Each structure stands twice: as C-alpha cells, then as structure tokens.
Length: 358
Image 1 (cartoon, one colour):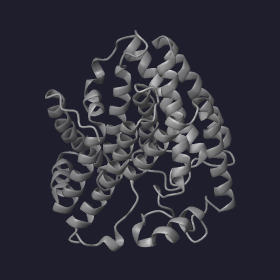
Image 2: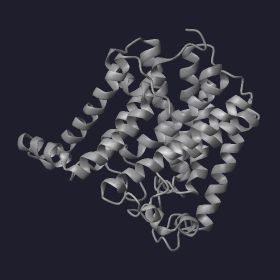
Image 3: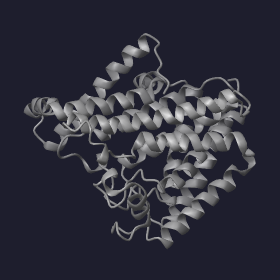
Image 4: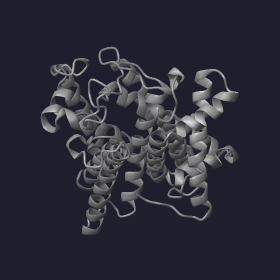
C-alpha cells in the first residue's frame, strides 16, 4: 500500500468513537456503570470516547497540514482561524439551544461557555499553529513540558481536591468566567480552561502518531510504530497514576497518557485487521459515522435536547420498557435506538456522498 493512500481504519476509529460518544451521552434513567463517567478518580469505558476523539483530531491535523508541507500561508491560517471559531461557536450554540428550549432564549448571563466542541476548537487551533511554526522534532519535548507543567499546577493548586473553593481549576474558571457560566454537576468544569493545557498535550500525542503513520513506508510499519508509541504511553501513564490518579474531570496527565495509549493500540489493531487483513465487512456502519463525524455528533446533541424537552425520550423509553423490563437494559436499548437514529441520518448523507466538514 502506498505511503499516502487513505487508510480505511482511520475512518473506522473515528466512526467508532463518535458512535460511542452518542451512545454514552444518551442513556435514560438507570444505566450500566460502564456507560457512565467516573464520578472522580478512575476510568470507565465511557471515559474513553472523548479522549479518543481528541487523539484522532491530532492525527487529522498532521495528515491535513502535511498536504501543504506545513507552510503557514495566509490561506492556511485563515482556514485554521475560521475552523477554530466555527467549532467554538457551534459549541456555544448547542449550549444556547438547550437553554432556549427550556424557555430561556435570552439567558446569556448563565450560558455555559465550555463544552466538548469548545475544547476541540481550542486544541485544534493550538496544535495547528504549533505544527506550522515549531520544528516537529520538538513535539515530544513539548508534550513532556506541558504535562510536567500541568502536573506542577495541579499539585500546587490542589487540582485533585473535590472542594471547588480549594481546587485551582475550579477557582480559575470561577474567577475568569463566573460560576453561572460553568458546568455544575462536578467540582470542576470538565472542559474548563486550565484543563486545556493537558488536552493540547493529548492532541499533540495524536499529532505525533499521525506523523508516525505518514512517514512509515508500509502499513506494517505504521502498525508497529503505533504499537510502540501506545505501549510506551500505557506504561508511563499507569506508572504515573500511582501518584497522579486517572481523572477525566481534571484531564490528569496519567489520564492523557493512558487514553492516548489505548487509542493508539486500537488504531494499530484496526490497521492490522482492516488495512492489512482486509477484514472490513463488519466496519461499514462505523464508516458511515466516521465520514461525517463532527456533524453527526452535533446533530445528536441537538436531537437529544429536543427529545428531552419535548418528552419524546419518555415515549420511546416507555415503549421499550414495555418489552425490556430490567431498567439498565431498557436504558441501553434506548441509547442504541438513539444511535440507530443518528446512523440513519449519517447513512442518508453517506449514500448521497455528502460529507459535512466543520
């Protein structure tokens, strides 16, 4: 396979991740533990989906910017700025839409400023500029510097404290943006400002994996490169977790390394299975999700808000619960039904070869 030929496995991992994000975000009532986020320290399968997506953003940054030779032309810079702003504004619009359907369309004094799309926007913009203006041999040292600096920050500032008045991450967000504009179901906003530091390191690891994929001469070498990177990060992450526990809420350095490692190892496995062994018939539904990943995620968020505010979720869940008595299984059935609905939207776009790039 030629070095720069598009790899189906990259689309499949993206699709699996987006399908997973939609699944875990749309349970109803009592769900299985694995489909919920860790309350504080720890790691569940649900805690993997967003970091996997940020990892993929890093790979995509490298492969996209490599086409232009990483030259910071005015056109490239305009594209990066436009996309960063668009992603951030879409995130704000989703938060506003939630408030608007609750009957508060003018409640800008308590509009949440941060969320998934906003973090993607900031990380994409930062990593894209780093890719254009920094020698790529310094990417790994930069990752180490960012994670080391963030480690010192959370140690010095009680970053693991569940008391928002003591935790530097919560204190910074409250001081800069005000409590009303933050997430209220956790001591810290899980997509808050300071956590973006380690998230940028996270995307840079994905970027480095993108470089490994791009530079390798064969798919076999791509698989081996990802396997080595994943193994090193996994060992380092779990060793670090003895002093700095895995924690999605604060995007801890150990969490960055472990989730990037698992993403790299899964990507290596998919490459071996799909691009080398050509065992890809099972993967077609995930390709549908992968070709319009961000668009389908945004659609799922809007649909979820509509369903919750109009009571459609109650109707669907109660209908499913009639046949599926255990609450957790009924919740899973509802989530799978919601994923299937978004798949239908994606399949219609896929059949018409409509690919929405956000």
